[in-house]
Length: 138
Length: 133
Image 1 (tube, one colour):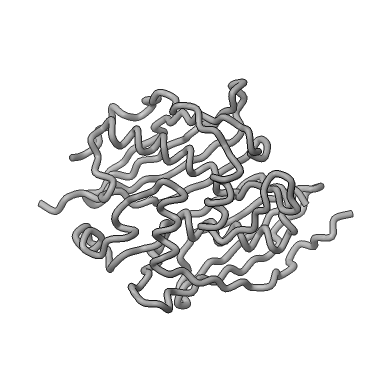
Image 2 (cartoon, each protein chain N blue to C red):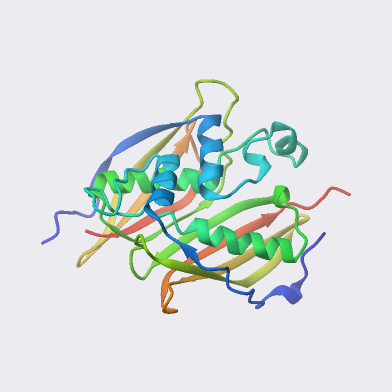
């Protein structure tokens, strides 16, 4: 399927709250090769790319809503900017908006922005992603 | 007075990714896209083989930044995923190298320009990090 221009500006429902636990952060840090010793340290910083776990939920919900097969998606770009560091105990939701969409060589290039907010509604981090939807050869 | 100087070259880091690392990362991140674990699916969608998650490669860049800056607070991190990192189904895996240069220092905001390569080719486009250090 091809994604249409009517998607630009569309905002998808916020993902269910995601509880940041030390066990999950430890698992993610280990999988990323990044040091993490738990909230009491000495290295207590949550790995910088951890918010992708929440952002990916939002991306998955968007792709499912539009009936896109995940195997046809290649991640083209990802940038995070952080208002504050994530901490264990945060309960985070991600809200994804389609920023732009263009077709190049049979592929859809979708730019998305996901606002990741804590329980108070304050934005903790914004993730912008470009997703390349590889077209099916005719 | 910052201890960082514009133009400072940071010591290059080398990390290895194997298929087992991709499986572990898939589980930890929730990204179960089969192009990261199935050669059959990866080649069916036109890729040369199973490729690393772009976010795993970016995580390695983040690891280097954490090591260079003693886990300084990260204000920005990102890149384009320009070249797929093909991870062979063997016990050796593939090496990813992360180099960095201090690009700007503004107060406590330090911008690092990164270069992330595998097999001599740049795999991330314009990778950069901004830290409070």
